[in-house]
Length: 303
Length: 303
Image (tube, rainbow over all chains, first blue to last red; front, side, top):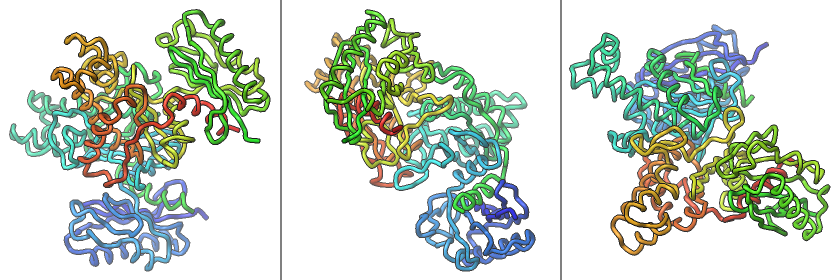
C-alpha cells in the first residue's frame, strides 16, 4: 500500500486539505472557509472535521499517516506550533495549531511556510521535478519566494524562511512594510498594480491587466513597470542562485505567466556571466494544489 | 600523521602554494609571480617547482596528498581543466592546467572558483566556522561572492558558480561587462571608486578613501555611494539567503571593513522580516590564505 500524508494549505480565505500519496497525487480532498475571525477553536473544529472526512473517503487511518503537514503563511513559531500571523489569519495569532491536531490524530504534525510548501510540492510532483537548484516566485496579493537547493528547501539564520520577494529592485521605489524601499513585492505584486491603477480609475490589478490588453496606454505603463521590476529581480536572483529553473506561480503569476516569463527571459538573455541555455522559466504546474502537496511531502520526506 | 592537501591560489599577480593539514593550518608555503604573459608552459614549470619545494619542506610525499586544489578566477571548464579567463590570466586561456599537474604529481587535481575557495577556507579554519548558511563578499578589483549552504558551496545551473557580486543595486546605474546596469561590482568595487575619483584628481580607490578620511567632501560622497550600494546589496542578499554570517574579505573589503560592516548592519537593522540578531557581519579571518586553504579543503573533503 502506498504511504499517505495529509497536506493542509492554510490561506487567508480558504483551507485545502488532501490525502496525498508518496508520488504527490491527491486522492481525496476537502476545501473549507478559513474564517479566522470566527476564532481559533471554531477553526480547529472545522479543520478536524475536514481531515476526518478526507481520511475516511481515502480509507486511510490517521495512525497509518506519515503525518500532517500544515502549509501556513508566516510568521509562525515552528517549535511551539504557534501562529504569529495577524494579517492573513487575524484571531488565530498566538495559538498553537500543532498540538491539538497531533493529539487528536495521533500522528506527527509540522508547520511549513506556504511558499516553501508550494516549491516542495512542485519538486515532488510538478514543474521543479528533477531540478537541483530551483526558485519559485508566487505572484499575487504578496510576492512569495522559495529556493530549493540539492533537493532541500533553503532555510536561513534561526532556521527561518528567507523572504525572497523583498529583494530590492529600485532603491528609490515605494516604501514597503518589510522596512525597505522598492522591493519586488512593493513594485510587482497585486496591490502595487491596484494602487497605481486607482489613479486612472481601475478597480483592481486585474482591471489594469485587462485595460493594458485592450491597449490603454496608462495601464500598459503600469503593467510594464511591474514586468521591469520582475526583470531586475530575476537578474539578481540568477546571479545569486544561478537556478536551473524559475517557477512562476500564484494567481496573478499564472494568469499573466507570458508577461513574467518574457521579463525573466530578458534578464537571462542579457546575463553574460550565466551559462547560456541553462536557466528555464516555467509556470508552476500544480496550481492551488502545490502548497497542499508540498505540506504532505514534508511529512513523507520525514517518514 | 595528519592528512595534507596542497592548496594553490592563482591570482592575476601572484600564485600562493601551501601544504595544508585537515584542520586548515598552512605548514609550508611558497609565493611566486603569476606572470601569465610569459606563457602557460613557463607558468606550469614555475608552479611545479613551487609545489616541489613546498612539499619537500613539509616532508610530505606527493603520493600521500589528498590532492591538489587549484583556486582560480573563473571562467574555467572544470571537467577539462581548461582555463578560460583571458582577463586576469592572459596567455593561459585555453590551456588545461589540471592534467599536467595530475600527471606530474600522481594525485587528484581539481579547479575551484577562487571566491568559492576563499569561503570554503573560511568555513574550515576562519570566520565562517560553524555557520550553516554563510555568504562571503570579496571586495577589491572585482566584487566576488560565494554562498555556503549546509556546509556545501552553492553551485548553480550547469554546476557553475553564481556571480553574486553582479546582483543589481540600482537599475539606472553604470553599465557593467556582466550585461547589467548598476550591479554591486559596478558601483562598489575598486574601479568604480577610482573612476569616480579620477574626476576629482584622485589617483586610485585608496586615494579616494584617504581623502574621505581626511574630510574631503567629494571623496566622502564617492565612498558614501559605494557604502550605499553595499547596503542595498546586503539587503537583497539577506532576503534571498538569510545567512547567519556575512564575511567581508578582499584587500579593499578588509582595509575598509568598518565602512562595509556599518553599511551591512544598516540593512540588517531595517529588515523587519529577518529574525532580530540572527545575522552577523564579520571580517574574513584568513586574509590572503583563504583561497589556498579553501582549495586544499576541497581535496580534504573529497578524501
